[in-house]
Image 1 (tube, helix red, strand yellow):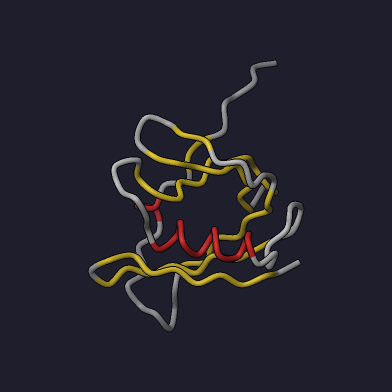
Image 2 (cartoon, rainbow, N blue to C red):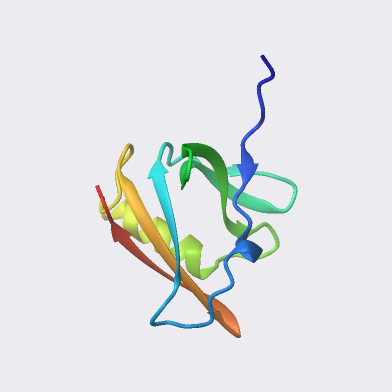
Length: 107
């Protein structure tokens, strides 16, 4: 059986420009450990799909930047223990010039 490496969550797949109807990304938290790839700093999570949860690398920020909106949202929620390993969260995202993020807990 061939084992595949987890894919990256591609932000370009989420195209909503409407704050009242954002794209929703449902993730199960599997790790808080950040790791660096060639272009981004990431965490591992599982993305909800029609076939269940599949492992993905979630890019929190580009390596060339010191911060990003998702980076700050992630760190704030991890530090305040709002999100926990094994729990399911929903990231709401829309783009209006820059990308915006909101987080809600599901489980």
